[in-house]
Amino acid sequence: MSYQFPHRSRQMNDHFKLFLPAVNTILTDPALRQTLQTVITENQAYKKRLFITSLRGNCIFWQNEFREHKTQKFESETFGISAYSHLVMVDPLVNEKYIKLEPRDLMEKSYSQKNICAWENRYLGGESVDAFLHKPSMTFQTDSVLPFIFEDKWYLPVLKSDFDRDRDCLVIIDATSETYFDSALDELATFGSRYARLVIITQEGFSADAKLSTLKKYPLSHIVLVPGILVPEIKAQGTHIEVMSDFILPVIINIIGSALKSLDQ
Image (cartoon, rainbow, N blue to C red; front, side, top):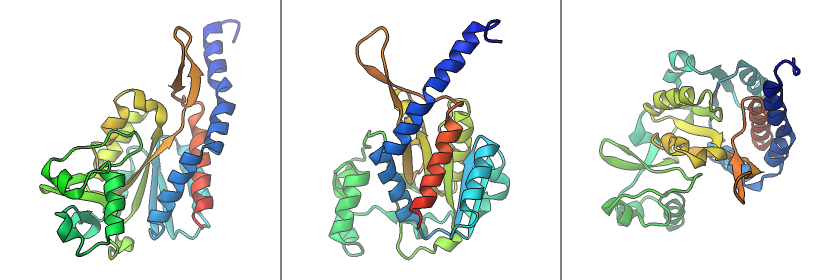
């Protein structure tokens, strides 16, 4: 076959040459580990969790990983199915679920100065709440999640401390595949319309085009950026971040699933 179709053979070889560097990058990236730890820490109280991806094999792996874990109900589905059976698991009551942005003097009556400052740095790019409400502007860091608007009011993607997580479901969407990216957006639009607690797994390599900004049109709670592989430019000096192909991604996604389980202790 390789003699008959040498071009296809070279393409396959090029893909699999990146496999070991990709795995090493994932296993040794401290920022990725910190992001996964944050996802677990801030959502540990969720007993219902849903993972949505493009490949059935990844669904089965994640399901088996969490089967005997302390999470009471972990489910996984491929794109196009979950909306029919799992959408009702999401609590859409934004006012009861998320923290509303109000003038700072009002927020200080309910939340500590420390928390408000942390939220301003994390979600408002260091801008004060009052300055943001006067003239809303969004940060452009690739891994930042943003405030969202509901009924003409701004909210942070931060759960209220008294919100009952048992009424809700944590939704994890795999948006790493170029091939199935539009399908991931469909799932994101569906669950975003109910203001689900959303964790998006995507590729750092997508920061070079409009894919990441497209994801941020929806109310996200966490973005997990899969680090890309730095590849030398052939025609110009420097490097660029290679977008991982669908040949490599199933293993990468399963590694992330295993990492989340090991951190969720």
